[in-house]
Image (tube, rainbow, N blue to C red; front, side):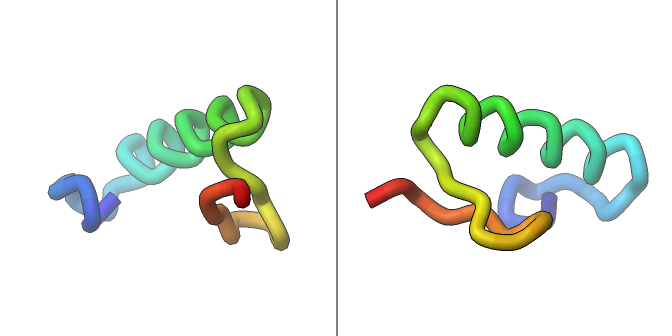
Length: 41
């Protein structure tokens, strides 16, 4: 959230987490551990 300029509020954290999960489903990101996202190589 901070990297995108959003405050660390629950609604912002949940929204960002949902977006990252969608990117994992699309194959753009990987999730090594819970909450640990990285670009797919």
